Amino acid sequence: MIISTSFYELSRLCSKLESESKTIKKIDLISQFLLNIQPNETNISILLITGKIFPDRSEKTLNISYKTIHSLLKKSSNQQVLFKKTYNIIEIYEEFQKMARLSGKGSYNQKKSILTGILTQLPDIERKFLIRMILGEMRIGVSSGVMLLAIAKASNIDSDLIKNAYMIYGDLGRIGELAIHKGFNAIKKIDIKLFRPIKPMLAEMGVSIPEILEENNQNIIFEYKYDGIRVQIHKNFEKIKIYTRKLNDISEMIPDLLSRLKNEIDSTTSILDGELVAVDKTGKPFPFQDLMRTNIDRTKTDLQYKIFIFDILYLNGKNLLNLPLKERKEILSKISRGFDLAKTLKSSDPEEIKEFFQSSIESGHEGMIGKKADSLYYLGTRKKDWLKLKEDFSLDLVIIAAEWGSGRRKEWLSNYHLAAKEDNSYRMIGKTFKGLTDEEFEQMTEKLLSLMIKQEKNVVFVQPKVVVEVVFNEIQRSPKYPSQYALRFARIKNIRYDKSPKDIDTIDDIKRLYQNKFIKKADILKNR
DNA sequence: TCTGATGCGTC
DNA sequence: GTCGGAC
DNA sequence: GTCCGACGACGCATCAGA
Figure 1 (cartoon, chains in turn brown, blue, red, purple):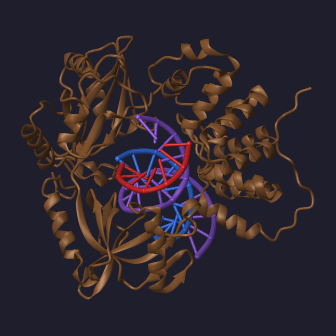
Figure 2 (cartoon, rainbow, N blue to C red):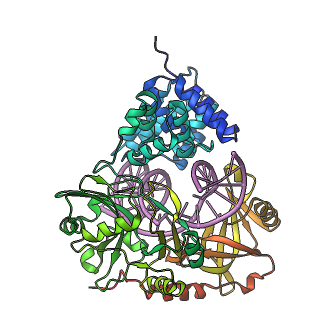
Figure 3 (tube, rainbow, N blue to C red):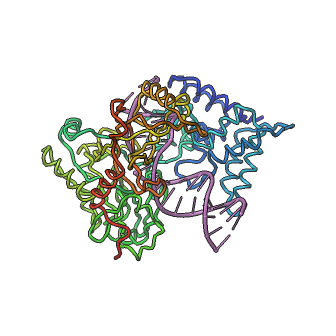
C-alpha cells in the first residue's frame, strides 16, 4: 500500500532545516527526506521546500502575498475549528494549483476563502511554513543552490551535472525527480532546446579598471553596459521569441523589433544574448523607468526599442557555451545582417579603457563590463569572468524614521527612511536597509530608539539627527515621494555621527544631479 | 465607470 | 538590483 | 568562492467596492 507523505512531515523537515545552520547537515536532511517520500511527491516537495510553488519557467502565479495573508489571519484568529483535516503534500499542492487557476470577477474572494479554509485547519508549524511558501520566503537557509546539492546527494549524481541540467531546464522540481527516479542518463540527456529559455550568465560587481585587468590577466573584452532588460532571443527559421533573465516570455512587448530581427540574424536556429533598451531617433537611451512604461501612446514619442546583442549561445543546432568568448564574438559578428551589437573594446591600456567607460556614461548608458576573452559561458552564475563597473553617486542624508526588521534582523531597526533638506524641513527620498554590519545595526538601533518621537505600526519615527552617507546609482522621478525624486539602489556607505543634519545635501542638489544626468537621456515627453 | 489596494516583474 | 554573513 | 536572505525603486494588470 502506498503511504502518501503528510504536509506535517514536510513542515517538520523545514523546521529542522531552520534550526540547523550547517549546510552539510541540511543537505543530509533534505536528501534523506527526498529518498523517503513517494516518487510522485518529489517534484512538488522540492519546489515547496525552496519556496517556489511553481517552477522558474512558468507563467503561473498565486497573486496572494503578505497583506492578504495578514488580513486573513486577523479575521480568522478567533474562529473555532472543530474538525481538523490533515493534508498530505499533494493535497496542499492541488489547492495551490486551484488558486493559481482562478481569475476574473470574484476570484480574489474565492482565493481568500480557500486559503482561510486551509489556514484555520492547519496546526501552527504547518501554517507557518505554508505561509512562507506562499510568500516565497522560506528562511530555512535552503534555496536552489543547497537544493541542487541535496538532489545530487540523493541521486548520487555529480552536482555540477545536476546544476547544469537545472540551468538549462529551468525547473528544479522536475530535475530532482528525473535525477532521483530516472538517474544519470536522464540528466545527461538534458540539452538546450529552442524556445525553452536557459539561465543567462551574470556579472559580478567590479571595483576598478586596474582590478579588472589584474583579475582577468589583462586579456579582457570590454563592453558597454546598457540600462535595460536582459533578453535571450530564440530563433528557428521564421519563428522568433524573446525571454527575460527570469525566463519569462516578453515577445509581445516588441513585435515590430522581433520581425526586423528575424531578417537581421543570419541563421537557421540560434540563441542570442543581449539587452533590450528604448532609444530616441538620435540614439539616446530613455531612462529605465520609461522603458518599463509600455502603455504610453507611442505615436506621441519617438521611442523605439533596440536590442544590443553581445553573445551567442547556440547556432544552427550547435551548443556554443563551451567556446571561449572571443570565438563566440567572432561567430556573432559573422551572422549579423544588421542587428545591433553591444559596443566593445579590446584593450589593456587603462587610459583607453577609462575613456571607453566615460564614453558609455556620456552616451547615457550605465557603465561597462569587462569580460575575460577566453572565458566560457557559465549558465546562471556570477563569475569573476565578467566584472561590471557602474557610475555611482553619494549624498549625505538624514534618517527620519526606521522600520523593524524581520528574520535575522527582527531585533533591529533595519530599514531606514532617508531625507534630504528642503528649506528648514526634511523630505524623504527613499529607504535603504543595506550597508551596515550586524554590529552597526545594533548600535544604530539603540541610537535611533533614543531619538524616537512615536511609533506607528512597524515604523519608528525619530528626530532627524543621524546623518548617513548614501551611495546610489541613479536618481529617478518618483510618483510616490513628495520630493518628486527617489534613489535607485541606495545603500549606506558611512554613518556620519560627526556631521550635523543642518549640513546635509538638499533637494535642490538632487534636482541638479538629476538634470545633469538626464541631459544624456532621451525625454519621454518630447514630441516627435 | 472609476479609484485604491495588492501583487508581480523589471532592475 | 546591492549588501553582509555563514559556510 | 558560493550561497542565502535581508529588503529598495518603478510601472502595469487585476480585482473589489464605491
